[in-house]
Length: 334
Image 1: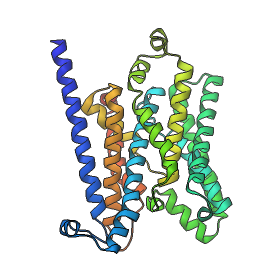
Image 2: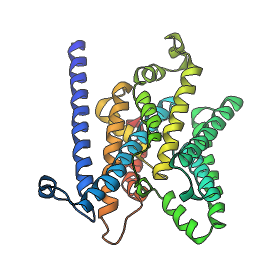
Image 3: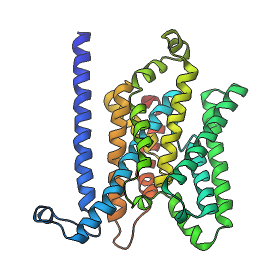
Image 4: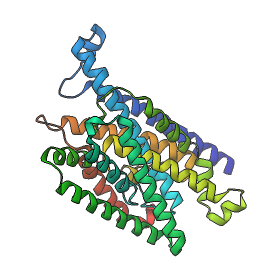
């Protein structure tokens, strides 16, 4: 009976993963042909003009890839943090990691000028900002022996502090920098409208590595003592996972600004559908996060004819009601 149940569960999980893959392909294609300059199926078959090829391959294709990578990265980072911190509401935004990455990226953009920097420079600064905040949190947690609840509150306080620092920077910025940085802080994929870049490769490799750590995270969910008894070097595993989360979060913030709720909501939605086995939760979170951010980008580009909505506003508008529902039903979710 148990073997039959496990086989049935495994078959259901693979069906869900296959359905998410198909959904991602469909939303990706719709995202490419929709917008202020639509491309019909007939035009695709008959042949595209030079302007249509330019819009499709030089603007929308890199943007869609960034949406996929950012959505997948934030969702996987949230899923890993929730296991590492043993807290169901942990995610890069709430733990201050996104705030640290944003502050470092804004400092570099204001100090050196966004348009004069190579694309990888802002990502590197965001990664260092995320790493500094994470190391600070872990050091204080070990020094003061904080439990997970206090650690999460510490992350929220660090996030508020980084927001205050960014407000000071904005206060003393020029009008042009102020508008540009404010739009970036609300979340936007418009900065990704350039060619595919080589420095995306480390992000893809780290994201793939995080998705392959499901069996280790399954053992970490048993608790530190049980994980040590199962032969896991806790210190080394935690350090590697944290560096991976910081790299993924830093890249996501650098490419798309601050986008909330993807890292918080997506892992819980996947757990409700697939259970708590991390070897399925991680790849399913990556696929669902990519689908949701592509859909949010499509809504941000098409809801208003006059302009483009900040994508962070779109995800927060739909994510906040889900977050409130999860808080109210926290016992069932955890």
